[in-house]
Length: 122
Image (cartoon, rainbow, N blue to C red; front, side, top):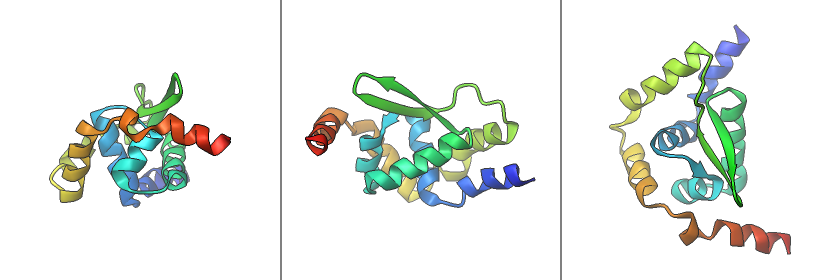
C-alpha cells in the first residue's frame, strides 16, 4: 500500500506535474527546466530525483548534458496510467499552457547551461 501512496504524492506537488507535462513534449536538461519554471537548480534536481525514484522519468547523458524524459518502458501500471492521463487532466490549465509554449522555444545554448556549471567549478 505504501508504494502506491508514494506514487500519488508525486501528483500532490504542482511543480512535479509541470515537469512531467513538459517532459511529455520533449526531453529537457535541468537548466532548461529551471529556466522555464523559474525555480532553483537544487529544487528542480530534487523534483527530478523524486520522479526518477518513483519510475516516472529516466535520464540519459548527452555530451555535457543529462537529459530527462518520460520513462520509456514503464512496468508499473499505475505510473503508466498517470502518465497517460496527465494531458487530459492538465492540458487546459493556464500555467501548463504557458510552460508548454516555453518548452517549444527553450534553447540550452541560449541559457548557457554548461558555462554556468563550468564557472561554478573554477
